[in-house]
Image 1: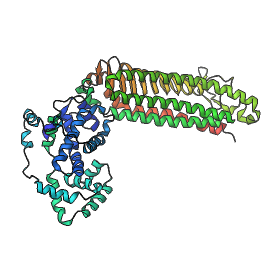
Image 2: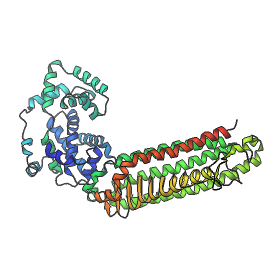
Image 3: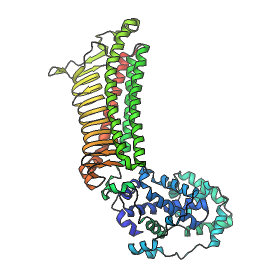
Length: 538
């Protein structure tokens, strides 16, 4: 198999990397996929149909079908289960058209490659028709649950670990099924079955046949937009998944602490209902943004000729999210102040505690030490009242927080700021606007987020950049774009990777993600605990 490995050694050998390379038209990469999974697919097909030649035909057709429809694979890291799904469909709906026969053109391809013909000759140890009949007679009465692991076990050099990996089972489960399977075989047939299955494993000829079948077929509509440089972006799917997971986790944790603080600040049933309502609305708008983008991406991949329309719709969805967050945060700040004033008027008995008195020291903390006329620390822990001014300090936190160094709150403005809406140099928030803007929507010179709008935009769902854009979904930019659905001068190639600084991003991504997680969760947790200590109703 060295002739097939010679080239693929220079590319990302993960499933995602091989898929991306194959989408770029690299047939050697696809041959690596065939080599990796041919034993699994042939074994599963044989377990289903009971005929070695027929099972190999079905497996070859499945690989050819996979090559044709490779652009419909939404998650390249799920390549194995996707291939198995195609195989199952082929088993249920066999199609034996001449144009789809994998053997067609195999001889010509062998001559082109050179050196392959010696591998494609018939093996010395041939399984006779009579042996096949006896083999299947021994196996067909066995439940498929036990038959599949048994067939794979003897084709994979008696390796329990390989069988467990191929079938996504634990090694203990495989051992149990193998033990039970052996018991179901007649003792007289055990040695015969082991030897015969070992001879039946597909070899180089199988791979050559598949390569012959795809030699004149394009891998899918996206192939025209994917160059050889795409092999460098295989890990894109990994970090975008990490970014999406972290953003969701950090947002949920921060939302929990924010809601808990709001409930501890509340004094009446109306205030508690309002706190829950605003929290729910922020969460709902976030889910609409995320789910809406996923739906648009799904349709864009299935209808690539109209991908531009879906890309425009995705950006309108992003703008709608930004507008909804800005409107909602303004309404929340005004609405809660107005509600507190009304509740003080109509329910004075609910505000008798010392912490509920306007001007109470428990509601606010301001450090004695000042620098340039501003306190070093300034935090508000009580629900904002009508006459309350924004919190201002070198480090500030509250519903409206302005920091000369750092700010955290509903609206946070500072060189380093974290909030529902944050503005500054380095910002993290539901909507983060800054030199480096991060959050659900990151807006700035460099933008990170579930969606990003920036000079250089990096996102998990959609990225809109002037210079470059990288995302796991929609990527739109003037110069360079990397992603499944991309629009730019340079798309998914070497130039795009260089312009977008992909290598630098990958080297530093874990640090960026760690900082984002800490800055989102820690202030929210600290503020919530302080509110509980100072303002919770006894």
